[in-house]
Length: 119
Ligand code: AMP
Image (cartoon, rainbow, N blue to C red; front, side):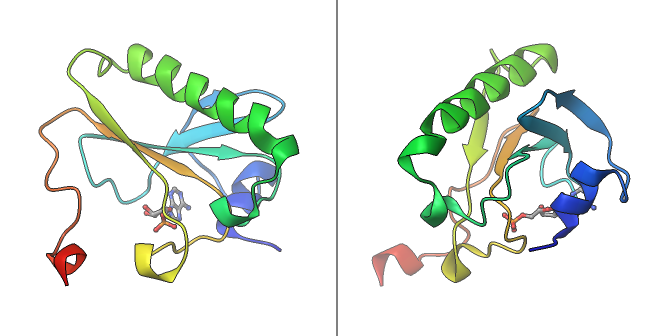
């Protein structure tokens, strides 16, 4: 399925890249929700966390290692950060291509924006 992220991988849509190898790409979010807001995506078109299979687990592990490296390089490793994956409608996942949000650079708000978790 073609998505905005597959177009960024192909290079038909520009992005401010912060990391790239054969398997993984990371770039700044176009609508930052924190002073540092980077998206980390696999080049393999996995639609969501629900679609991750056992063969993808090394890739998922590498995405975490990349997040750790970027956090260090962007100076937020010690001040702290959040690594978030949205999966499916209730999470608000907008782009059906697996991604982690790496957020930091300032105090982050509540983990969720409402009290629905107690409903
Ligand atoms: P999610 O809601 O978890 O699917 O997150 C999708 C994210 O992609 C949002 O934070 C958007 O701001 C971001 N986004 C959408 N289009 C672009 C783009 N062309 N370049 C960078 N980030 C984008």
